[in-house]
Length: 491
Image (tube, rainbow, N blue to C red):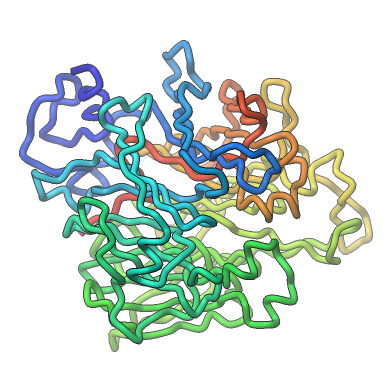
């Protein structure tokens, strides 16, 4: 009964008794995003951890981290679920059911979906039987996926209100972008086929988000797996191997209705999110290479348009591979009340908070440096217009120098705590932050001022993945057992 109570604690909704685990007649998650904000405080977080590409011949794993400040194991890895194969590159994750299934009493948020970006394997993890020590439930083999759909390089996973699971795949088995598309798994995790209609494949694949009240899904573009898996080569951008487009689909029909070309201000559009309020037709996408947050929106004639909402200027630098360094926006999220947007600059090293109550005019309200290539002690320096050089002050946490740059972020339901990891993708980590591969990732927590805005580092929280039993590992995406603002969609 204790383990069920933990799960219900995390997934509690208005009519549930969060402490007794009493029965209710609703499905997983919460009725509305605002209701989710009053859910109980997070106590556990699952983190995908990678040995693929590090030179350590060990399987990747899912770490369970204790994030309950009252616990004796607070800020520690308390379990490691090692997958059975080597060379997967665990990356992103999603649920078999989320708040989109809230109206279905038979739905149960029980399984975490772990696509392997490199091997193409998809792991299904039971997190409900023992939330602190999840167990492997099923493996969807890449051969089955390729045979039935031609898809490979699975990335983003979202549950659908129908009970199916949809996974964006970035190419075919040979790494060609032309083979990308959307995989459908049924509720038993069998391969059903592709989601999009024949002839409606996007130019490139990456992330996606759907907004059912507007009968729309929009997907973003990274690049051809044959290119990005080898590291970043600027020439590949010129060669057309990276994307700059958003793809607008009918939902749930799967017809490609519009392609938005973001142009040179929108190179490598990665994470994409609509506002959480399902009645809104506005969202944002983080364009990594040009370091712009682009806002997209529905126009009066029913088509979709876009504009640059936030621009991070590249910094003139010395002692780096290029004369200018982009911020490289690699992840962002939106608070459940749609008030704040947070994003990271993986290369510059800062995490930012913007007030987006007026989505057309975001206002910077918080900023903190937690790593990056320009921190004091680095050979790389920024050069101002006056020729003077400078670097950023990055504090130590628990006596440890911060490595790499902020990469993946996850926000508490109430919006008051932001968790940060620092691995992007193993080959890119090795290229830009070789120390990260050598010494491992870490995970931080920032305290958030939700009244006036502001970010501060919590000095009591630091998870060092350099101290792992099988050697230093690379930590990427984070998920709470009861869902969060980057997994749950409201209909």
